[in-house]
Image 1 (cartoon, rainbow, N blue to C red):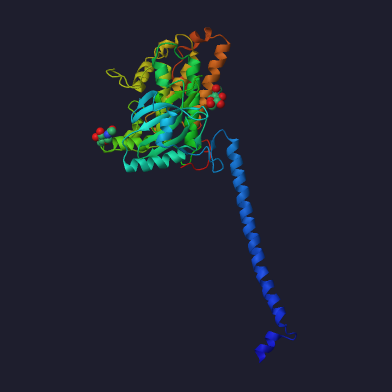
Image 2: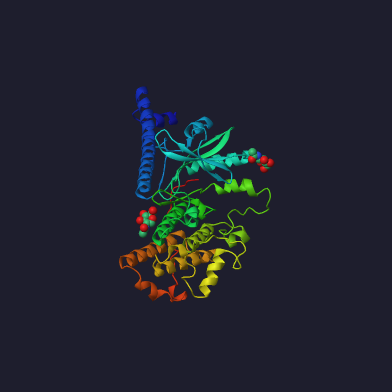
Amino acid sequence: MKAVQIYGGTNPLPHEHSGKKKMLIAIAVVVPLLIIVVAILTAWWIKRKKYNGENIGRTWQIVGEGFPKLESRQFSYNDLKKITNQFKTSIGTGGFGSVYLGLLEDGVQVAVKMHSNMSAQGVKELLAEAASLTRVHHKNLVSLMGYCIDENCMALVYEFMQGGNLHDKLTHNDRPLAWKQRLRIANESAQGLEYLHKACNPPLIHRDVKTTNILLTENLEAKLADFGLSRVFNNEAVVTHVSTRVVGTPGYLDPEYYLSNQLSTKSDVFSFGVVLLELITGRRPVVAGLDEGNLVQWVHQRLSEGDIKSIVDPKMQDGFDINSVWKVTNLACKCTEFTSSERPTMTAVVAELKESLDLESSATEMHTGATNSLITDVSHDSLEISFQSGMPAASGPSVR
Ligand SMILES: *[C@@H]1O[C@H](CO)[C@@H](O)[C@H](O)[C@H]1NC(C)=O
Ligand SMILES: *[C@@H]1O[C@H](CO)[C@@H](O)[C@H](O)[C@H]1NC(C)=O
């Protein structure tokens, strides 16, 4: 009785009033909840928008869901037959099969890289890697435009590079590359590699940086090829025979990685240093039968004798600024340090190469000659370069 009285109060609510009260309570609960949900969604949307905006503002771009046409195009075996005109024009042989020239509907030339004989595990890994790599775009990286994975074939479709690879350009004697062109190629391939290290999260380690993987356009613009997939293919090729999982090409292989099996971006820096030495000397990274062994040792040997000019590719004749060559040689030596922590980051390498390019440009403007004789006997040590490797790492979106 007492309870009823309290419940009813002095002004007992009629039945319809209590219904209204329930509704009021419901609204009081639901509306704030809705507001919270809307607020969260809005915040998420704004953040996402800002994030996309940031991406577009950088030199690199990772294609998102909004561009289905650009994202990982899948080809069937019949598509490949059509675009390569029945595999008519072979443009080379990779370690894993032939490469054919193809033509897409829109007139774009492509290189179709066939891969034969993969295990089921290899196919699975390739599929995962290829899908993510078609999203990696930079003007100094050869674009993976699509792939074909079915029971008839395994193939990767790349942008076609008319100028061939850097190794061929360096070894062929007709129309040798001038120093300035070599510097440009070094700068551009360094930019591509830096992108892989910084824009991709976790860093995409190339694992097989070498002159045959630096491809050139008709105008000698350089792009780095074959990134991201060497692990898949090298696992296939190597693991069955060798107990270690070391991946790479003799002459370019980071000795620390070889010993410790610890791979890092600095392993790519080592290989890039060897590429720089090839650009300077025009020599191959490993010379069979040579007393000095590999190119890194050969250059050190010559430099210890104090003669920079004796390492320079004779094909360049006198068409270079010796200061600029010195600077790049010094950089290459830093990159090929035995201990990875003493090697610069690719960001520092890019900065150094820019300075070398500036030196070469200003020397060209002053019509060199005079400067050449001036600097020849500057000692190696006086050109020590300090690297700022403490640059903040860009936190790009995840690619893999
Ligand atoms: C495929 O691989 C096996 C073993 O590695 C080899 O014996 C065979 O010849 C290969 N087949 C082709 C078509 O390459
Ligand atoms: C180095 O390469 C980048 C990327 O391709 C280019 O934007 C830049 O102008 C080049 N730097 C020099 C000094 O040529």
